[in-house]
Length: 309
Image (tube, rainbow, N blue to C red; front, side):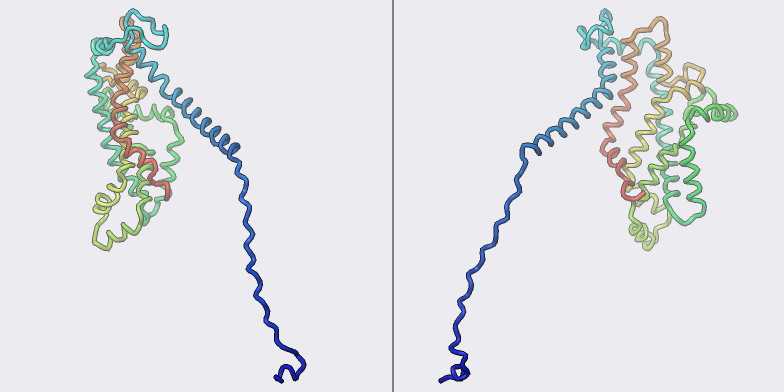
C-alpha cells in the first residue's frame, strides 16, 4: 500500500487539459459607403466650384481685354463675346499712336533699377534684422513694421518735396528713388534668413568665415526663393506705378508706359477701346513672362520662413 493510500487520500486523478477557447471574432464596423462617398463628392464639387469662380473673377477681365484687342475696326466692342473678325492690327496701331518703345524703355530703366536696389538693400537689411547681437534690433524692426500702416498717399506730398529739393523732378531717377527699397521686401528677406539653421552658421564660424562670407556664401544661396519674390514684387511695383510718375514727370519724353497708356486713352483722335485694350495687353506681357520664368522660385520663396519667423 502506498503512502497516499495509507493517509486516506485515495489515488491521484489526472486532470484532463481544458479545450482551447477560440477567440471571439470582432465584428467589423458597418461602412457607410454611400454616405461617405456622397459627402466626399459634395466637398470636392464645392472646392472646384469655388476655384472656378475665383478663376472667372481673376482671369475674366484679362480674357475680355484680349478679345477686345483683336476685334476688327467695324465690330462693336460689346457685340458678343468672341470677335467675328479677329485681327492683330490694333497692336500695330498702338505703336503708331504713341512712342511705345520709348515708354517701354523708360519703364524698363526704372524697373531694373528697382529690382537691383530692392534685392541688394532688402537682403542687407533683412540679414541685419535676423542676426542677434546688436542693441536696438527689436526697436528698428518695430519702427519698420509700423511704417507699413501708413498709406502712400499720406507721405506722397513730403516725398515730392524731398525729390524736388534734390533736383530730381522730371527725371527717371526721381521716379525710381522712393521705391529703391521696400519694407515688405525687408520683412520677406528677414523671414527667409531666420529659417536658416543656426548650426550651419556656427559651423561656418568655426571654419573661420567672416560676416561677409557667411552672408554671400550661406545666407544668400539659401534665400533664392525669397530673392525671386523680391524681384517679382519690385518689378510689378515699378512697372504698374502710375500715381508717382504722374506727379514727378512733366516731359512726355520721360513718360513711363502707364502714363503713355493714360495719354492714349485721353487722346481725342485715338479714343478707341480696341487700341487701349491692345496697349494694356502689351503692358501685361512682360509681367507674365517674368512670373512664368521665376514661378518655381516664387512659390518656394513664399513658403520660406514658415517654420521659424
